[in-house]
Amino acid sequence: MARCFCGCGHTVRFRIRAVNKRGSIIDGDVASVRTLLARDLSSPNAEVLVHDGDLLLAELADAVHTGIDPGPRLQ
Image (cartoon, rainbow, N blue to C red; front, side):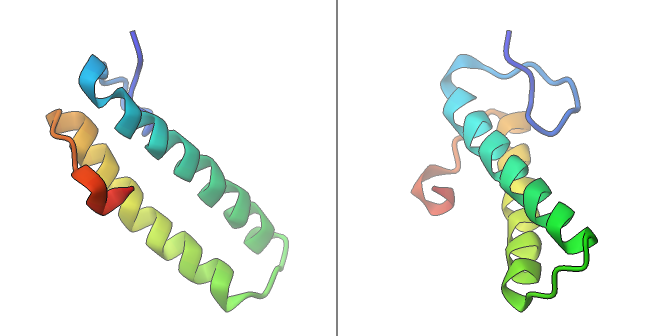
């Protein structure tokens, strides 16, 4: 069984796995940029990416936890 990308351990229903995968990819991208920022990268775009990524991740996690596909809005 697939587990939620956020690390909560929630089992992901089959029909919502694509949303979970999307969250996993964004989570990895945001983590990579956070690492760069921690290494003294100075970039307003990177900071915006992390901020927006965190918002998207929260919405995607909510979709996975409730089992409701967020639709094209979060693609």
